[in-house]
Image (cartoon, rainbow, N blue to C red; front, top):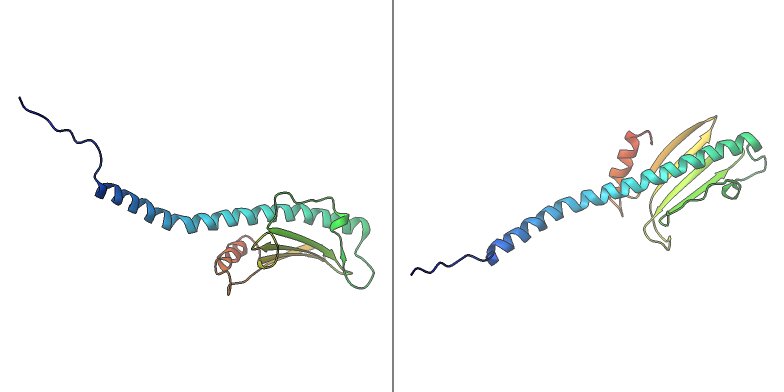
Length: 154
């Protein structure tokens, strides 16, 4: 009578090779995933800023630009409240000739260090937009501003 010995699993080498391949794929995919997630957060912030832009334009049409010296914070006068933007701050202000919306992306919830800033300025009945990054501390923000530049931001 012959006895057959069945192979009942994977060898340790085979398992290590699979884990190594998965690790390499994760190391390649993770930075791109993080950039994509950050870009989607920026797109949400820009979408929110668009509603602030509309509200700012309506505010200027209704009340006009402030005639006093200096700028005023119009955030309290706008019916726009950000939701789920704990790492972003929105600062809409107006002076006698223009209105500006500053969007700041913070590195943490304490808002002690900014990562990049987006600016939208309303003057002469049109919006101009710009992106300011901190490549010395956050090199990935340069690529983000470059992508925004392709979408109409300076």
